[in-house]
Image (cartoon, rainbow over all chains, first blue to last red):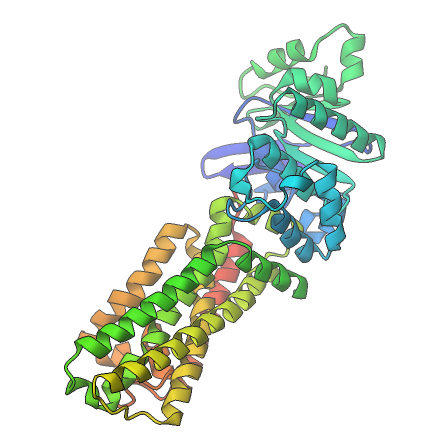
Length: 237
Length: 245
């Protein structure tokens, strides 16, 4: 992100936001509700146009990627499915558009453990199953970067454990993950570094091991940084 | 583009929505032709114009349902949020709109063909049963079916364009239905010259109905194709320029 700004009329959702991701790491994208996390992710993925600045993926705007599904996989909402369509057909439609072999649909269904339910209509799925179906869609192109918006929402403890293990393995295989969340306890167990925003502005970036080395907890740091006023400058940790 | 078209065709046939619409269309066409054939006075149904109108219920309803199919191809994606993964996989949104237009034209043509053929078949059975001689010849039947198919295909493209511009599903579907079922009828009574150029009337004209009042079928086809092109272009502009929230 380079000086990324997004305004909706009078409302400034993202303001002069600059940060970058390290390859092969899991980065937690943190901030209170309404801080601008989801807007930032939509700008990154080309779903919204920035008012100023740029959001680049692998050095390009998302729409300029030659094989977007093979570079980036994303889940922005837990319920982006037609309720009357089966999980398998949801994935097949995306695979067709991305020119991904249909065999890959079966692979990702097995990967997220949805194979037995794949022919059921999505309206019969639990929230956890929908989260996993969204993840399967993001993985169709075997991407290098995963962008996930609040992926642990609605997951039971087993589902959270599964997700944490999955993200860790993805990063260990040279994948890069940007995961937004406001569940700090979960983030603290999953990510390598954090980017914290508040009211559309960057307030901090840090590696978790650096915080631990200074005897600070993520929660204390987060609460301290996000309790300030809207005009605070980004603070070094 | 071919990949997106295949994807859109799968989306159109992988829910029960279009199947339900298709069944509803066939039921309504049958009912409409039966009611006209049985309910109107025998003397009114003796003339060619009124027979064309009765047999043309297939085109009329086919175009309406095709427009709804086209509109829902994009409004349903917006309503259910699937537009996000769709645009993530295909960030060139113009390709998505073009594929939706293509898939909807194919689906609309199928709806129009089935509805027009059914209307002709039911009409050809009902009128003689009422003791009425059918005055239509092979050319009339061919035009009813081919025109109904073409008009429905073009109305499906118009539906995609309107859906992409309006985006909200309920206002889109209500607006299209109100326009075709009521608004153009008001034009017809009060502004005959204007009504000839209205898109719903052009569809009726393509299938050869009311030849003394409406424009010629070939000219009507050309003008309705221009409407479809303009609607699709408006949908393309709206889709490529707006944020997806």
